[in-house]
Image 1 (cartoon, helix red, strand yellow):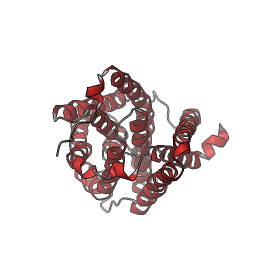
Image 2 (image 1 turned 90 degrees about the vertical axis):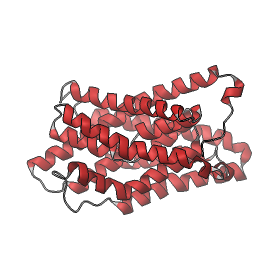
Image 3 (image 1 turned 120 degrees about the vertical axis):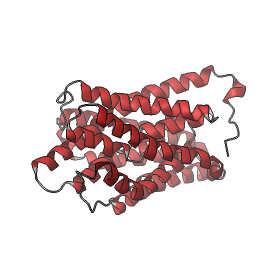
Image 4 (image 1 turned 30 degrees about the vertical axis):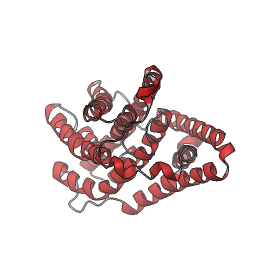
Length: 308
């Protein structure tokens, strides 16, 4: 376990690359040809991520007696975009992969500008005045761990169609094994103590995952999106980029004051605990979505025309 702990960064990179390789092998360039028809869905998921969720977090923080570090961590996390894990669970649950990848890229681009502004707006009393997103790191990670591996997987599907299916299956399985190793390493490392804040904070964080997933499902179905698109957007909203939250927190609080240490530790606790809860609940949601797909009649399972 000591080896895993010291190589978590490399393991995380390998997990994302394997996952995107496998998912890319199930896609074709033509799958993205009609993505502009999904512009309403993309705008909707951006509004849920960067408007509705932050406002709900502010109300939650004002209502509950959360420690300052935890309150800041919750606010920081809901201002994060979705990440590559949302694409993985969309793939596993039979969602709309082109929509998922496009929404992830769109939310990542928006966060470069929107997250610093919203963080100053909602947490101006605790964050430095000159807050800036680590743009270079975000662009590098999206390019190296999302776009390029996906393009490589699509190349395999095009050039080696007979191998595309087994290639996809085994690379995705390998990514899940690496993900399990990362989770086990995080639990064994002792970086967070689950019950150090009592039962309230873990309950709130688990509730945030469930509420974001459920509310997104209700809204997207109410406006007429297909079941596959509704599931895809619910995954995008409920699984946030916790690694980016940890990175941003580290750049915000470089000074060694007690207050800064508390805020940084709170952000770390929220990112790690929320990430673990999201993995478990997304796995359950994926299984449920696959089960419901089997129950739908064949006609209902056909994709419908997306809302303009």
